[in-house]
Image 1 (cartoon, rainbow, N blue to C red):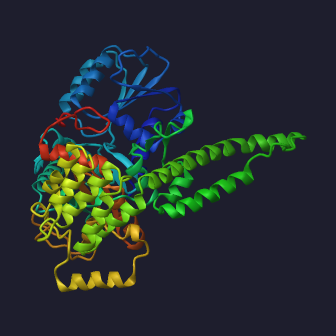
Image 2: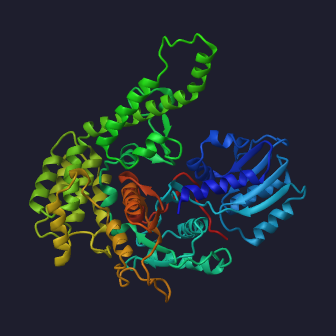
Image 3: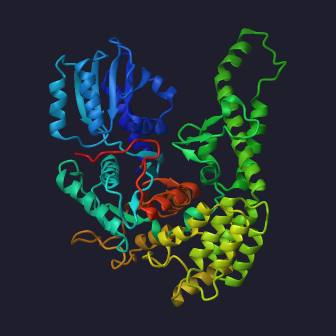
Length: 569
């Protein structure tokens, strides 16, 4: 179960099917992101694709010597653009691939427009999602709910995205959903409806243990997306923002021109692939080793280039050296900037208190520490609000809660009214009233004992003691102990055996901390394969935008990096 590989194979297949010769790749706003996350431009160039164009761009030239490979979402706009294109074709022949199921009537409309008979084939290739890591996918959608219900235009798009993941991985799953969330049930039913309707597509070879799709709601764990992170990928997203594997570094003091935007992709960056899930301390050491390794391989200024073979050796090693030099300067810059932000915002101190709020149960110590930090003039507005939010979620119903005085403290600190309002919004979004699971403070004796022993073993790292709620949910699921009363099956049947292939989807967005949990479970649980997906991949900033859109119930532009979507048919 590897979502990156699934999308890569689809794209390779498209390009290979068109045969030899020069090609143009025609995409829309969303499929451009889908492709760019798994392939670099230079990799695609090697496959004779010399031009990348958007189907909606008006001023494309006629190039009859090129074959066109069209990879598009099956939206009404795209079908309309294609009809216009086929009436006045700019390229010699068209290979059309839709990223999801397309209706017969739209195929008929395309056939009618193809008077010059330039279409060689039309196919469905189900790459309708962003493959972030091999076990992590996103739909790049923001603001999916209005209160506790779906934003109407978003449900069809999420259904399409999720069913395309199932088709890409060739899974026809049993479905379980979070009972406390009506949105989870609606999505489960909507996915089931597509599976029933397109039963021929889902007719995969039966496995002994059927795969399982588990649908969860972000509001059950509003704590995880509020915490500062200390592993490389999560930290980069939290402090710098990863958007389709790209980081904008243009605000970094004294940044050079070629490093204003960098790409971090585990597919073609060995250092990143090896350090994705390591913590910040280890990355510092590894960066130092990378530098030293680079220094050794660096061509010496006075390198003897006397014989032809010396020169040949130098030229042969140069591309490798150039690539390494790019990798070194990129990671040194990124780690340097993370380091600067950590000390400027005093994130070690902040994170320690966040972890205490998330994991410990000592109200008097917690309130003192939050108070102490709020009085620190170097504490940023984001971090101040985040601490108060964590306190509000953690001690929501505590008899001696000091939330009102912390709110006054924020006001005195000059925190904007918009940020202060967010505290109440987060409690509305993910407070006790809403949650279906026991996010905070275990109550039964077994759980308390478990907590106690966890405490005795000592935590390897005070900054990473928190485990997302997802860890417990998956642990229970794998052991066959996840309660049907909280996570019922859709339909009459249920799974008798320990599940093997699990696809988890979080409505309202997943996080890189949860992706790390899944990565570790995949590594340590033999015979279990888990893929995690979400409507988005959040850091604190995007999560709070999600909360505000949900609580205010307002509908804005709801696609991170894409226009609004129409329903499938």
